[in-house]
Length: 307
Image 1 (cartoon, rainbow, N blue to C red):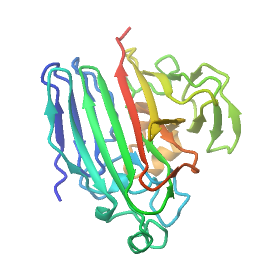
Image 2 (spheres, one colour; image 1 turned 180 degrees about the horizontal axis):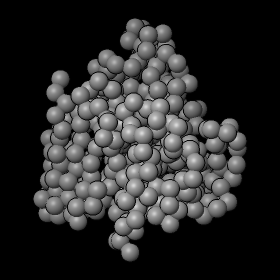
Image 3 (cartoon, one colour; image 1 turned 60 degrees about the horizontal axis):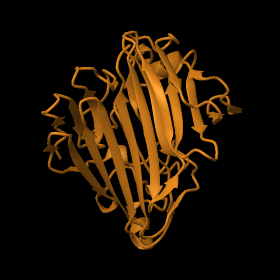
Image 4 (cartoon, rainbow, N blue to C red; image 1 turned 45 degrees about the vertical axis):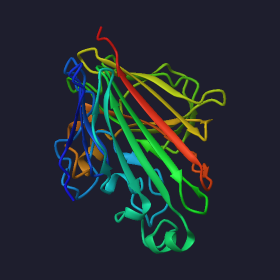
């Protein structure tokens, strides 16, 4: 199957987005002012041999690899999706991508309940669509999941978004930081500590891999990210619903720093200076999609006026 890039152009503003059928991974979003929002490693594979390192890979049905029989982060990012027709009008441009579990051939594992034989016997099935929309300064991604089988299943899902940090300044706190998680519960996946975020800013001064869980009164993730020496900023708003009812959205903040960057074959040794991942998701590991239920999960990235 072809993995030729799909270009979504908003004629009215000149904004442009590029996505690949493999993983339905968005690898570029340029605003009408030609400002690049997303980071992709120079060593990323775009030939369908592995998930693309950068942009917005999609995570489902697991975050990380709790099920060792399935690849890390599940199978959405390592299968070919079917793109629909590109639309382009005065207000926005976009495209819809679709994936059915019956057509997933990579990454379902061989022993778990998601494996081909097991899911066919058990009646497990899910249909997924990704709707991508752009305006002059906004990129919106919405994943729709529908349990089209006849058994419920637990799931996790996430937009693994890599932001470009301009000027390679990810380690400079005034150039790269995240605000909006004060008061969140924090689980540090490196130190295994449980904390509370009591500082307004999150900065990168070491390897960072933390899950931020919102207070009980908060459902949406809504943060501001400083993205470089050009004083650029983006806002990220993410929200999810199951059959119209709000689902709390957690968020991962990640930067591999020195040692982990060197250990990744598809990531440059020094590229940790050029990126920060802010990854909204439904991450409890206890969320269940009942038969016939539909989950709608949206991330909206807006480039703010540069200071």
